[in-house]
Amino acid sequence: MMIQDSPAFGGQAYWANAAGICQPLVGQLTPLANSPLRLYRFLTHVEDILLTVQEDEQRLQLLCPLVQRLLADSPWLAWPDLVPDPVLGWGVQTLYDEPFYPLTVQRVAWSPGAKSPIHNHGAWGIVAMLDGQEQNTFWQDSPAAAIPPQLEPGVTLTLSPGDILGLMPETIHHVEALSPHPTLSFNIYGETNYDQRWEFDPLNGTASLF
Image (tube, rainbow, N blue to C red):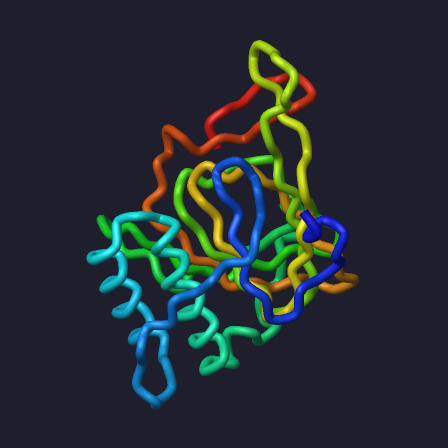
């Protein structure tokens, strides 16, 4: 795909499917009032979508434009006040996480050069870049027969401020912060299936619950 050769996508929306194939996401904008979309109203719209739409791909098509509208109306989300942990290399600010409700909303900051493990999320997810650049590398099953199955890196996608990425529960990726200053993103995740959320070690062909 052409995606892997392009360094960044200003203001673009993408989604990565279960096979680690990344492609442009065609959003379906829900009609909204002209007044600014506040976080509490955003959460209400998200709940309406989750109650009426069951397929994760269609949910992403509806939720990504909603996230873009929220970020356009809420510049406070991009304030550089979240500092990554100097040991872990990342920091998380939870904006919404209600017990017994399948939704988590966060801001996430990564230190320059920090890398995540290779993992999936076990839930649909959306990452919207607010500041800095973040490179996603998607991993796929190797075409060579192997037991256990082997992973190999696929396409890479660099997100810049304004870009948004939808992830399926099975999508396998790892993230690297490219900017000389901490990156900042707005992340939203559905209900996590912890029995299907994995961290992968492709060198040893192993996976452990994450």
